[in-house]
Image (cartoon, rainbow, N blue to C red; front, top):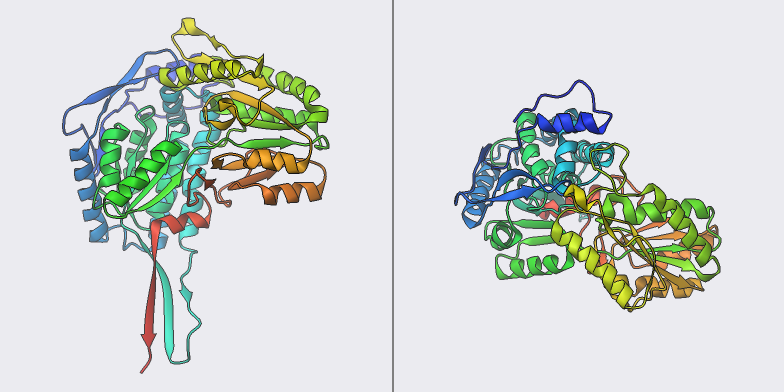
Length: 505
C-alpha cells in the first residue's frame, strides 16, 4: 500500500479523489504481527456506498483464524512482553500510536469515507481526532490509576489490586469504525491485555490499517490482532471461544443478546455490551434558544446519516411550540442535504450498504402506513451516481405505539411526538426498551434537573445534544447495554479485581 503522507490535506473533492487513486487497499487480516489471508483463502468484496465500486477483497476469517489469533494473543499475554510491562512504558507506546493515527489522518479519513460513506469533512475533523484523543487520554491515565488498601485491623494488610483480564475480543460496528475501536482497544491495551479486534464486514479497512500503525508504535506481536469477517463466522467463533476472557461489543441489541448467550454456553467470559438506542430529545417551550435547539435536533438525526446509536430519533416537543418548532427543524435540515462524500462541503453522505438503505426506505413506508405525517424528505436521491443516498426525513403526528417511534431505524428518520407536561414527557421518553441517551431543553433549572434525574438513560444532555468528552463514561440503561466506555470507568471492563490479604506475625 502506498502510505506516503501528502504534504497537506486536500481542500476539495478533486484533491481527495486524487489521494484516493494513490491508495492500494489492504484487505488481509493482521495476525501475530503481520498481514495474512484467511486460512480458508476466502474473501469478500468491500463495496463503497459512495459509488458502488469494489474497493478491495477482504479476508473472510472463520473459526480457524480465531483459533490462531487467540493462541497468539494468549502466548503474548502469558509471556508478559506487554502484560508485565510497566504502565509508564505501555503509556509511551500508546502515545506513539496516537501520534501515528494523527500523522496518517488523511489516509485514515479517506479509508473511512470510501468504506462506509461518511462525509470526508467529518471523517477528517471528527473521527480521526476522536480516535487519537481516545488513545492518548487512555494512555495518559493508565499510570495514574492506583490500587487500594482496605480498612484492616492493626496486624493485617488488605490490598485491592487490578490485573489485566487476559485475551479480549472486541467486536465493533460500522458507523464509527475507528472511534468505536479506539474506545475498546485503548483501555484494553493500556491495562495490559492482548486484543483481537473484529471490525464489521461493512467497514473493515481502517481497522486493518490501524494494526500496522500499532506495530510501528511498538505494540508487540500477538498483542493486537485484527480479524475481518462476518458475525456468524469469526464473530461467533470469538464469542464462543473457551480461551477468550472478555468480549466487548458495540452494535444492535439483538446481536448483543446473542453474545450474552454465547458467553453462557462457553466459559462465562466477561461480556460488555453497548447496544441500540431510541433516544428522546425533549424540547420545552421555554428552551433558551429554539433556533439552536432546532439546529442541534437536525444534527442529532442527520449527522453520520442518522447511523448513530445516540441519534435523537424521538423529538418530544411541547405542544404550544410544536408547529413553530417543526418549521425551524425543516429550515435547519436545509444544511443537511446528501452530497458526494469526498466533497468537503457535504454534510450528509452515503448509507453504508444496500441492506441498510432498504431498511430505512422500508421504515419510511411503515411510518406513512401507520398514519404519521411525512413533513420532510423521505426519498432516495442521487441514484444515478451508483451511491446509496437518502434524504433526512421528518414525521409529525407520531406516538410511541408506532414502529418508527419504538424501533431503532439507524438512519436519518425523525419522529416528532407532542407532550404537554414534564411528567408526560418523562413518561413518553422512558417508554422504551432502550436507555442510551436523552436531552432536555429548558431555561428552568428545576425542570432541567428533575427531568434529567427521572430519565432512564446513560447520558443526559441539558440544552445541547451529544455532549461530553473522554472524561465522561458512555453506555446504556435497559436493553441499551451494560458497562461503560470512555473515562476511568472503562478500565473496569478490562481488569479483574484481586484482594490480597496479609496477616502480620
